[in-house]
Image (cartoon, rainbow, N blue to C red):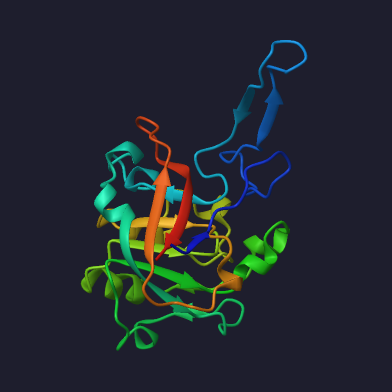
Amino acid sequence: MKIVDLTYDIHEGMTTFDAPWHPKVSVKQLGRHGHEGRETREVTFGTHTGTQVDAPLHFISRGRSIEQMSLKKLIGPVTIIDFSNFKENAVVVPEVLRGLELKPRVIFKFGWGKYWGTRKFYKNYPFFSKEAARYLISKGVELVAMDTPSPDDGRIKISEVIGEEQDSPIHKIFLKKGVILVEYLAGLNELKDYDGWTLVAAPLRIKGADGSPARVFIFK
């Protein structure tokens, strides 16, 4: 079996979105071999830290929470689309998707992992148009994964549009229809073989949560 891990490490000082609702990661050692005879740690992080799964509740009031997500959506054959030739702020539109075989799970490779660990990761990444999001939904796509931090236009200043229509509209289109979003995929820059993979996206089962860090990998 060939396995490719698509998950970033969680550690202190790691890249996180710069907003009050995205806390910094803290890892504190508690148990020690020379004292307590074992190692244990206290870990603090937000529900949208590193490689992660978004549940509808993230943007949809009374939407499903992370422990309510169907494992059938999170595990199964996946289409991998290489859009690493897209330039900064390029937009995924229906025209570039038509004619592609789309399984219920789709990974989009934009080559954005090269910016992981820098503030550039959150700026000028490719994103989806509303029409592309609706096209994917119309084709029966149930999970959309990407190596960028968001399916939305990163140039929009969230602090200026909170609660308005312009605030994360692509998230809302997908999540309202129950499409699971997987963001911050790692390791796609090295992946050259795109056929025959099965995806596993395994978030923590945090009761009532809007999302969770996840171990995400593909295998065949």
